[in-house]
Image (cartoon, rainbow, N blue to C red):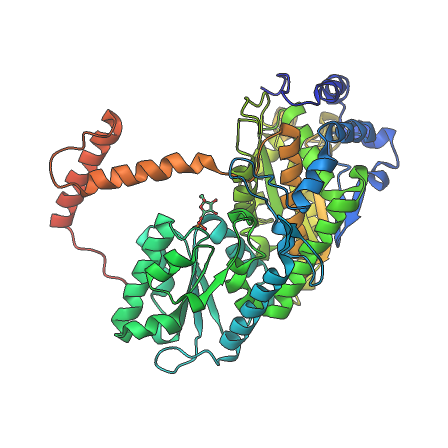
Length: 557
Ligand code: F6P
């Protein structure tokens, strides 16, 4: 697939890269470093508190020149301007994708259809700050007069993954006497486990849903409401224990949440780009408005860099283009995201939605087929845990898996000795991937010849290393913004719309049909295909048989 002609208007530049890959791609990283003593000094870039070393990519400065030419031919400049200027870049939903306006400074002007949206953005941020402060200070009282100690945010996808990731990442900055939990899965176990040790009188629910029509979120919100009312026995309690974050005020009202307790955002904010909006309310409650503002400042710093830096020194542009190189020219199918920070343990999951819901497309903006592979599969785990799990495949497997290593120069907690060990592991992994261990080196080490094939590391496996001074709200915001824009850069090269997600719709519609079939009392489901129908029949038979013969596990408190 990666060798097919691209359908977008940058064929010549694409072909130049195809020729380049034939002549260059097999050159070993050992040789690249041997032949260019300045490689590590030249192949790095710094922006908004992040340093990227891309010298361990299977690319040379000439590769970057060709990739930048490709970006130019794809009119990336114009596309970036359109993005930031509020053009309707989300063509299939006919709206802008102005997440950058969420982090614009007060006084800046960002217009949507001639209307400056920055004052409204800051008005919502101000309301969020007042509310978050009242929870943190204990002045927002529950229905029985007790302060809120527990916050349960209910949402899914973009209305969950960002806040979950950020709340975990910034745990060291959070007010530790507040319990912050996130519930997303329609499996009732998720809510049950979140609530099992909480008291309703001290619990606030934040129902986050851009559309306020998402099945999972509404099912969980209804169950939470029932749980709350069973304990507090008064409908009026809902006003003190439920707030909503949505763009759909009428649905919020219909659900029974007072719209005065609603924090709004706008249809020009995509779900997976919404962490900086009111969707981040649980994060703001956890870390406080000042830290939240620092996170937005980090986003903004990277936004500004992305908008203004020349492509060859532009961190998100280089990240996006190097991903294109690995994916479309070196044939890599996936990208491993390996944060060497336990606080970033949910970062790979967050990136999965950002990258794969955005760029998991096969149709161009104009409706034609994209002739090349689009989004690689993003996955990962924090180091060093992953080293004792799947790194074997990264080092000696048959697949090429480019890696993004992410680390910090200073730890947050006092365990500096362990931090050096952590970072030593991170640097060593990228070194091992790049340079491997040759037969000659193994022979020199006196390794048993029979074991040499097993102990040989080919190396030449590409990686980026992203380093920042410290994990702070600012550095997290900048990191997220960097990946957002690198995803956009890739979309521009493939000429796809990264801001819609039609691919999730069919499953949602079919789930409703299957649910109707399960709920129907009479006969086997006829509307379903033979396989799905027989699975439903089997499910119903066994469900009822098991229900009749076994007792439910009694929850242990
Ligand atoms: O999974 C599809 C999706 O539409 C995501 O794009 C979105 O983030 C998520 O569902 C949740 O949607 P909502 O915020 O409207 O509940």
